[in-house]
Length: 428
Image (cartoon, rainbow, N blue to C red; front, side, top):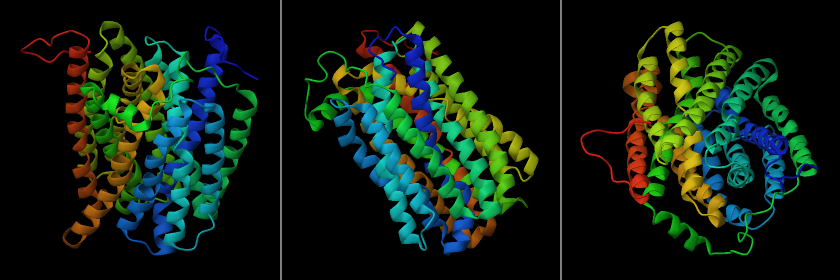
């Protein structure tokens, strides 16, 4: 069994990091596969865009968000490896159950079950990573972990798209659930729980007290707002891009899945890793540098997506989507590294869990739903163009996110005793 008791053991640290990345891969695969299956599910179950928005966001996000905090409180004092293993097995089983539903209500309940399972994995993983990698390498370590997002998208779109085209969307959901059950067993049997930092196991501060202490920090509040808004745009665009391409161009589910698996999966993978690298370099120059990296990345996202959505050529759209999806998740590595930097040792899982609560309830829960709602509202006057209008409108939130990341950087700099200079905005 691999142990992290000796944090100097590089091979052990990296084995666990890559294994946690695989867990996060299955988390995002099971979470996002519904997007590539949405059009087939809509036809089969006779759903509206608003109902699809509930399935791709709100039904999952409500339980994923609300249960993350109590599970994170356990993760700050209990076995995090056990928590992650149990959560992985649960959400994989509920993904399998999603393949047997016969109506909207049953599928919504199954998606809620997936959210329940996934609620505990990410905060516990963040805490493990933060305790085994120092501050100067933490952005890169978080970026490696966050590679689970693009890898999960790549596999979900590619596998889900073709299985749905060949044998139906139900088998796609059943098929992707089995490897997750196996991985849960591998994690539990091969990784020994790393020791909590000294004093953590004895510190059992109340949840509200821990959250209140975090929210007293202005930098933490702005990080929370920036991550939430950036996630709203990211989740909405990921959820609706397959439907947009299928409605706008003569493509099959398998073709759209292949195209998006390469564009989003590989593109955001490159962006996520690059964002972590830039975050570490910025951290060497200043403690608030990673937040400026987040601001710059988000500022670039809106014009890239708007330009891609406003063109009417398939190839131009696909080409323009490449840089857009390279940057749209690149903020995550430096963002989560800064969350762990501002948190104290006894509240690291909680620091991530509270932001995940807000991020997922608003970003994941409302982003796809509001996009579908806007599409339904303007469909009378715009017909097939309604989804394009809705997706273009939601892209603007990246600019709002950039403002909060910049404010977080300024607040963190002040908290560390450095007064901001006047007349210009510092760059990472």
